[in-house]
Image (cartoon, rainbow, N blue to C red; front, side, top):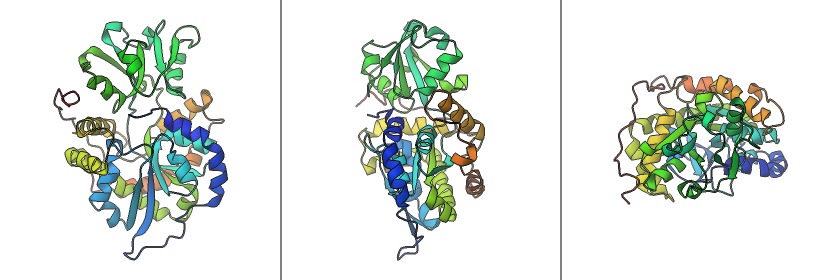
Length: 362
């Protein structure tokens, strides 16, 4: 199962390695093409192979990367792997993970830049049972709240509602699964809509018995999955990075329209969670992307600025990093403009109804 806090923690604890390895440069800065004329690049995933990354596998399988002149290797992550460290040290040219974690790595000295945003809304939520009567953060006082390390969104929300985390609530360090919530040891649990929430549903608790709060409701969310590049590689290979972003977004658009096939692609790679769970996760990911107000792949400057301010306010980063220091907006605009033959907004998208017993029938 997913370890939700691993990305932020990995970015922070790996900072010494990042500072040391960044000086080594990127291993693919030569720009040399292979025998087939394709330029090799590696994409480091922020976590293990699962439908959270389906668009990249689709871009690879559908030939979008090849059409862009790229030979892309997809490198899965894990609990002891930081995509930011891998890319910052030059072991991969590109990575995909939460923008918040990339910000933390940049603040620690990593040479990275965000080049695209995949999700249009946050998947990080707080879950409670309806029987607990917790309708909004105003009802959190006196409750036991499960928290992961680095939960700046959670503390920002409490601050907005005037809740003192030391006296008004009981903060509980949440484990790597949902057992504390399921056993009643906590009243409110941290979760990702595409993973831990699914674990709760898989336990047999129906969605109708849950209250799910999204940080976006209070403008205290931090931008999540996006693409970032090694700074040195980006400087010397802007065309390749631009082409990679465009091809990757084609992959995500494909997964909107061909979700079932994208699940098959992920399962073929080998996953810890079965096909039914990947189907659930693919459906959830599509709902985080579509409809897209800014357009698939576009960096939402307001959301990025909010992320920077929140991370600084709660001590995750040491300063309010300028937006142009952490994101290449010009490249992002060029890459998304090349998608003129793709429906980047998906205004007509509606999530399909999945079988009611999808997560419990196995």
